[in-house]
Image (cartoon, rainbow, N blue to C red; front, side, top):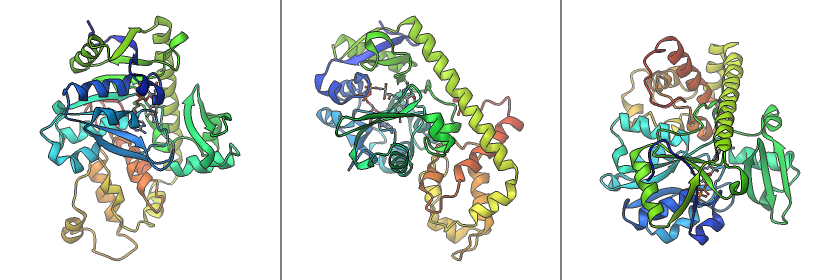
Length: 384
Ligand SMILES: Cc1cc2nc3c(=O)[nH]c(=O)nc-3n(C[C@H](O)[C@H](O)[C@H](O)COP(=O)(O)OP(=O)(O)OC[C@H]3O[C@@H](n4cnc5c(N)ncnc54)[C@H](O)[C@@H]3O)c2cc1C
């Protein structure tokens, strides 16, 4: 019997999955079970592409293909949410399962509020997330700070506050993330500001925080967050696909403390980033967005913005067609549209070829809006 609110150490009984999994393979084991038993028609997950720095989204319909997706890619900065609405149109009435970080989930919730996805059809296996590192920064950081050729790295991990790399020769090297971030390496700036570390609006929230004792590194801490989640866990346990034991009470306490500390750190980064921005708010926005080449990447992956760039160019009365530098109204209009539901996923900034800190601007506007205009509304079910 599994119930909402249960906290369990969980691991897969499938040896192949366990071999490539991050922490015992509960996530891949559950996805495998759901697909094999036709609880879902497909799984949207992430697999390693040409190298460690290349995270590729993939739709899988054959359970045997799922072990390709096991393992955590901390340089996987992609957002899965809009892919569901944009590319899985033909699966709209089918059921899918997804492993989702907090930003993937917040994006999906916003898409559902716009009727662009149907959450009833999606089984959500949440992944706790302390943040991701941009692949470009990761390569630079590994070369400059670790003194290691990034192409020699076969595995990276984030553990106990360190970014750790393992090379093909078996060398392990870890550097404190705080130290890396003081020098502007480390996690993406939107991830540093994120407060949504344990995705409890998913059906299950899975992570390594709080797994102690002999299960450390070999099991995942699963918090059961919905009836759909408890149903999946109960069926997978009964079939022997996964094994569980109650989470150690000390582990539960540690997990709570780490989550609290990470939220405090996120708040510190908000204070730091937003204060620096406010020193010359308008000047900074004007100067930075002045470099825009109107490639529309910021719109392309944004989970709260739907517009057809072609139509936008043709019909806008505020933004002249063609011609650079861009009219300031292009970004002002965009901010006005998105910033009361911006989920700080960072895609606009990550994809911007001109490296404009767009996520910082819209996150600052959203945060200010929540604080000053809608403090009691509690608009979104998550805390981003
Ligand atoms: C980027 C990232 C950061 C994380 N940070 C923390 C943390 O700070 N604290 C914590 O408690 N747990 C964190 N986790 C979760 C933890 O690393 C394990 O994924 C979790 O314990 C499940 O382990 P497993 O062996 O059951 O997963 P596996 O069976 O190995 O499955 C992992 C799943 O993650 C998916 N995945 C891998 N990379 C990404 C990505 N970049 N984006 C979306 N999906 C991805 C894979 O497709 C796969 O479905 C993080 C995970 C990721 C992906």
